[in-house]
Length: 414
Image: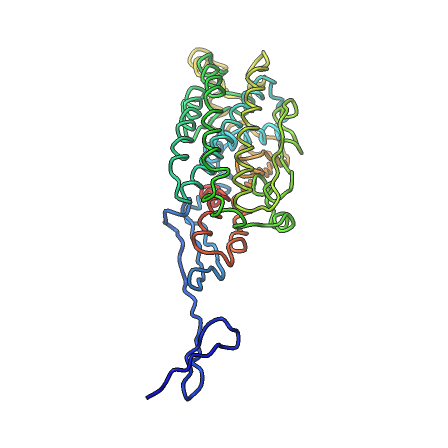
């Protein structure tokens, strides 16, 4: 009969049963856990292969490409005008920003100057898109921590934004909004009414959402000091947008390299300190308020004048003109079918997307389609840091870290 003599092991971490042959040696075995590709906690189709020591994450590796659609290669075979329908399939939570970013890139190549009114309308639509994007991110972060009510409150307001989209361009999710050279149409009185109504109705709902979450003890216990990243590490990875600003770096494309008349508007750049999940949540909340400020200024100071540039070779003519005007019909055909050569050139244009710097690097050899086109997708860049950010945390922490990063699979893969 062997009597167990419980003695403390050398590390002092646990009691180790002893036998006549000596203490029993325990071997830690790691478990491989596939988080995704199709899992309710992953916000899209992508996979994380995690090595787990019990509930703790030891290491992780991302697997992307499950919805890779080869947009950059497809763009080499499409006329410039037909590429825009690809852009709003990237970050589909803020499609207008993608659309206008591409329009501005082509306008830079062509040397087209967009009228002030069109620039202001673009700013209004882009900032509404930013609000919508952040509402989804922070609302779902609440759901991932077990709080569903705030998400429902915010989605009602997101629906108001989508009704504005619908009034402006007829679409809601993949908007294909605007045109190379300006807007497809001017803001209608009904669109202006809906924008003003949103500006009035949204603040009380946002304040209620913040009162539910900002100082909620359970919510804070789940996300404070979880998934933090230093400013240095964030910059080394190439972070931009809210995830970089949460780490303490006040970089915003709208301020550093203004476009579409952003220099005309007053707004602040919210910055965090620790770069953790709570800071990312708070930075996005404050950015929502700043975007609302910009929309209010733009709609109150909307300039008079045309809503598209005088560039008939590139700007798609109104459909009613195509039916009765031979010249408009010819331009319509040439633009849609890609019959107009673009100048030779190499341009890069970036906009402040919902998740950071969304850039378009375009090389033209003088043909009717890009020689080469690269999309700088912010999701693809900051997602590389996910294993580092969740190392040593628990599985439930990894879920909220991923949620606060706002990884959009469509933008990740492109």
